[in-house]
Structure formats: structure tokens, C-alpha cells
Length: 91
Image 1 (cartoon, one colour):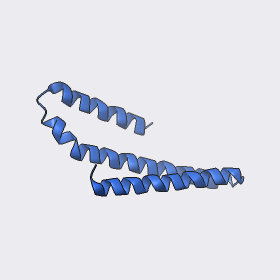
Image 2 (tube, rainbow, N blue to C red; image 1 turned 135 degrees about the horizontal axis):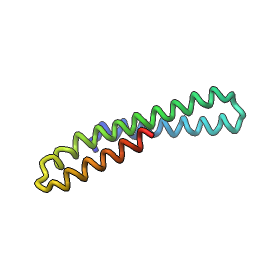
Image 3 (cartoon, rainbow, N blue to C red; image 1 turned 45 degrees about the vertical axis):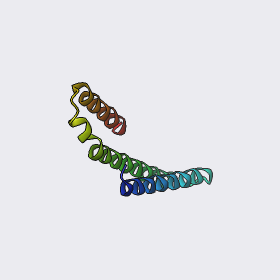
């Protein structure tokens, strides 16, 4: 992973952790449900952003290697891998 992507990805994860910690505190303190739900949505957004960044990085750095691979099965495996990751992120 490129250094710039690594830094922004880690920052996004740290923010998500912070939001999730806040959600747990809110639940423990019996905060208003709508406020908790809003924070849950914020954490989901952050994690989806991280996942998209990882996918973009993977395509930028790994796809060229597989695209140029002589063995057809390597290309097919790469595509299956992407489909698996995409399906998980969109459920």
C-alpha cells in the first residue's frame, strides 16, 4: 500500500474507532436512540470509505500485475477476489 493511502486509511480507521467508542459510551449513559443511530451511521460511512480506499489502492497497485500475468487463472482469481470483497462491503 502506498504511504499516502496507508496514512489516510489508518486515520479513517482511527476515526471509526473513536466513533464506535463514543457509541458505546452513549449506550451506557442511555443516550437518545436517534443520536446513537446517527453515530452508528457515521461509523458505517467511515468504514465504507476505508473499504473503498483499500479497493482503489488494490486496483492501482495489484491489478497491473495480474492483468499482465501469463496465466489466465491468476486473472480469474483476482476478479473473484474483487467480487468477494465487493459483495461483503455492500451487504
